[in-house]
Image (cartoon, rainbow, N blue to C red):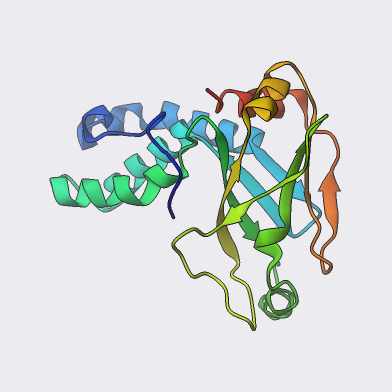
Length: 201
């Protein structure tokens, strides 16, 4: 998972809680993470889910991984930072975890074969601005010519004009125009859009 500038919200070793401190803070952080993830999730139909990640959600994920693995050595902590920091928005983009979800494994297998390239067909369109497509899985191979992966990591770059439009209250469409799964959400909830605007510098 990587890329784009990540300096704006980069999570550092020094900013993380110790395992003991996180144990105490975890109930509150977990409740906030569940609420934020719900707020920042966009469903495109029944089978495609986009989670717009942010610094807090990635911080929570890192702390959870360190807790589960009981990691306190610098090298292990750095591995988690290297894994999750690339999904922190840079101030001029959105970072999105995309999941293709089918309860039945056989259905999922068929769908993944039909949806090759779907990760490159995810877009946003801000009112008054041109449509922009996500850049998928930078530095990662997550698909083949036979099938796509069930999980992808997307970066959606924004121009200064797009950022200004969002900050001024423009609406944003989110969609997919893959021929096997044409779907879009015309209007995001106000609270969701307000949360996404906080990713921008």
